[in-house]
Image 1 (cartoon, protein in one colour):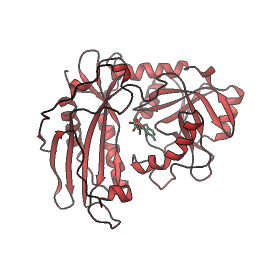
Image 2: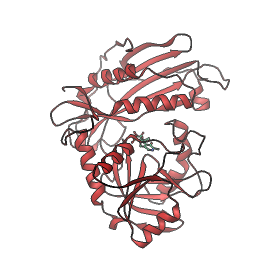
Image 3: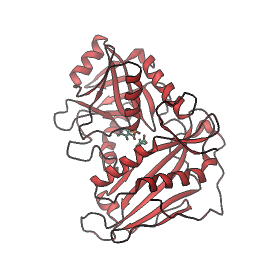
Image 4: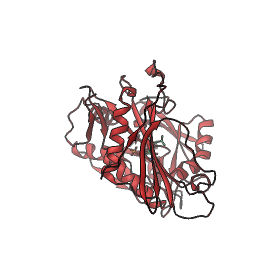
Length: 359
Ligand code: PLP
Ligand code: COI
């Protein structure tokens, strides 16, 4: 079911970024945004594309007081044949609804949501940068908008989509990042909201992230919230290890975000003949492999971060250098194939590329 979307164009279009090498991540926004309101009696209504600007939100809204918010992160690419593409967008739509269910926010019709994404991307297509490694980051989000202070499931909500032309998420680009393993704070526990992409998970992660940054590390690698023994994921990416030729990645047990890049990398590696184990990995197993040389490669996967090599791990005052602090061969192969499919350079045997329009 498609939503009936009205379009009000801006009368003051902004200048598009001139120097694409300076885009960074999430600092510039396009001319328009999508908004839609929800009321439990009316359902979703007033779907509209409007000029990008502030959201008029009641000061008592549940988003401010109780963190009733979920979001998604996806990208539109300018492919080598000139077409504009998204990568597995229905996966993001489904995950948005899973996250919404956890926070008692309303579901969006899947086909309708895909149509919304199509329309905003097509309208903003001239904002998609041209240089290699750049894209249009799409940030759909939904929040509770009930104007009273009771703690309750949303009777009113807003769904919005904003878009931002981006380059690399990390300043390091494809150079290896340095990751600190966090032994004090935890991000999520099973039964909590770890598997949902909700703002609160990220709020809870900030303190450890700040600590890591002060010590010269890019992000935090989380351990499980109960025993602080098993590897979970990095701040904005899932994590994978190549240990003695086998690939190991934490199983999805409820506290880790089910990453779409993770899922795609697993499918690619299995098709290349690698054994991929989705299971619990203890910190002891990981550090032993880092010390005895069997930890051959480590990398993170995510929409913003793409495939990001991990060159150094820090845990309890010891720094472990991985793959000579260089990108490993498998990490590079994953990066090349994944971005190759996204940019239409490598044949897509999986049907992952979704064509929005012909540019
Ligand atoms: N884990 C966390 C905490 C994230 O924020 C992200 C980014 O979205 C990921 C993993 C990777 O998920 P995906 O590959 O779907 O972008
Ligand atoms: C993404 O990769 O899309 C993310 O959401 C990561 C981060 C910017 C929160």
